[in-house]
Structure formats: structure tokens, C-alpha cells
Image (cartoon, rainbow, N blue to C red; front, side, top):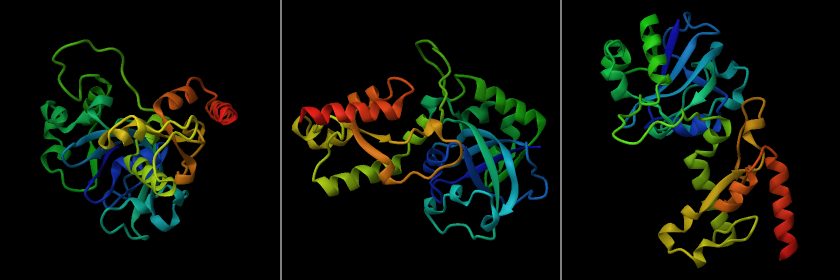
Length: 270
């Protein structure tokens, strides 16, 4: 069997969840509890204004009551916008292999699926209410085909296709808008302004207020690409950096060493 697991961003912050936990997630499972087995292919579907397939993976833990799952730290209980699920509700463990949160990342939009001859008749298009949808073999093949196509998310009007863009662990986690917003807010409250924690650059001296925040990026001190399993990111795990320093830190695979070396270098110059 193959499945689509759908999330409604008005009830659950799906983008933040996928960003925080790019390797293992749990999804509320109120149907097909006895049919879902380990190894089944899964597409994660975001409902709403930007509906479509935003992640792909496979089942690694069959539907289990939330209080008994193997990795409760990956449940994302704090990301519910409305009332969170009961601890007795079934959750399916899904190992993610790729995440695409926007058309720029080549997610498969609902419009692209609706235009497909096979998927246009699937329940995710015709009756898109619910959490779990079964995919037929033909529907799975069609969705895989769209997922593999760099033009599935939107029609190309000019230019050229340059290489399929894949969203890996670090890129996905870095995109968490809630973590970024919360970190910048907490940093500003503590220090009175924003500045780069490495070089000390303060955008307030160069940019008008509406653009100051955009001059900064939020860096994960512990590289997410090295995570062996699902991990929880807190504000203490993040650093506020200017774009130049952030790119320097990620210039090669020695991210932790680069951060420490640059921080010491600039500290010695002050």
C-alpha cells in the first residue's frame, strides 16, 4: 500500500513540524490503522492555500497510540495551532527522505496533481477532507512522476531548468519560520537590538527598520546534517548571524569548527 498523510496548516503548523524534524515525524492516523505497515511509501500533503505534496518518505512505525510511540520527542505536540491530538490517538511513524516546502523547491502543487489524468480522480483531489488517503498503484506512480519532474510545481514561462533542487536536513530545518522569528525576538529583547554573534555587524546602523531583520539569518550551532535521529531544536541551539558570516560558517563540511574559529578570530580583534 501507499499513502498520503494530509495536514491542515490552520490546525497544525506543518511547515514548522517538517522543518524541526526532517528525519522522523509522526502523523495522526484515524483511518486504515490495520492496513498501514512498515515500508509503505508515504507522501505528506499540505492543505490550504498552498496545497500539495511537500515531503516523501516511508512508514517506519505502524499506527501506535501517541503515548506509546518509540520517539515521543518527535511528536511535535507544541506545534498545534488548535487543540492538539489526544495521547490515545494513533500516530504513524514516517521516515522522511526529502522535503520541499515551496514551489521554488519543486513541491507538487495541488494544481499540478489536478491536471494529471490519473491524480485528478484521486480522493485527495475529489474529496480532500481527512488525514489519511490510500493511493492506488497508478496514483503512486503518477505522484512519483510529478515529484521527480522539476516543472511539476509550476509552469516554466522562460529561462532554463538547471538541476533539481533537493531539500536536505539542514536546509529544511533552517527554514523553520517560527524558530527564526522566536530566536530573533528573544535576542532583540535580551540585547536591545540585533547583531551578528560572530562579527558584531549591526544592521540598524545601515538599514531602515523594515529591513533590519532581513539582514540576519539563524544558524544551528549543532549541524542538523549530522543528526543521527530526530532531534529537538531550542532557542539555545541557535545563533544570530549576518549573511556573510553564515555563509562562511557553511563554506565546507566543518561547520562547528568554522563557527568556533571565526568567533575566536573576531573576539580577538575587539
